[in-house]
Length: 414
Image (cartoon, rainbow, N blue to C red; front, side, top):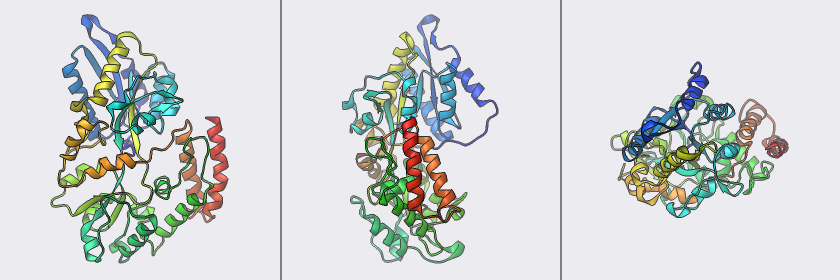
């Protein structure tokens, strides 16, 4: 899932986090061991994690897990606790940002056979060492409004075979109609880093040691997005989409296709009465898949480390825990073990949730780099400032080629 981090400003939140992390960790009288667990997420996701922790405590009454729910700026606050010597015993971490925190996490002994694809463990590996245990996968599928396809006399995309980017664009244009506030769009907004992957490109090469934004694919992806946002285009402009719920547009018939439909949208789909929405494969080369893991503090020793290892193993490989990842009310993502896949699909047996489990097998997990968050932020700023993706007028090919040098320099700093 792209991470859904609730953007709220909480005065003194860093101080509260530090206080929570520092409270009574270690072994207590009576044989109870206390560990802390930090995570991000919205209200529903936090409630899900709380229920998973409760399930662990039920089977491990000698371990007290103190939950630290970080509601905004997760990575920044996690870094603050590490720098201040108050690191949580266990921390949720994304494959994208793991390299920047690898030094703070202990090497973990993970059995790859516990998972149905070795992609999970590879995504949690930095410099040859597994630094976090796979916890949940967040692949993307494409959701389509079948009624709009029928009205346009167009066949639905294959549920199993992804259409090409060229075919997707042609279909999106055909399904676009009307003007102004009554305009119906063939596709939802395209997000550049994801659309770049769909076109077969990426910010980095497979090894993650070279920036590739000077490639023709990178420029073509930007050019397509600019055309798609034009007055006669097939996606809403950022101004059109600002503050709008794209799922609501899909459900009410303003969008024909939503190409970045994530597992976090499943509860919304389940809540619809008689939904005429189908889930199919993402076009082209797919979209990036995030894998979230659980890292154990390198400072944890003795009883703390033993308790943390047991907790992480339960969250990652227990069917009881993994079956709680998605319910009709909330979804953190797709389970990482076979034993929980059936319960995931049964949350909505008529909605082809198997599309998500199939998407996991072909999902693109981008190489992690230490400076990845900063590189992506700077890349989007360059595109928005200097090209028609934002307020600029420069040729995307030239802007991306120039930024590629900056990207490579930032990689070197990492």
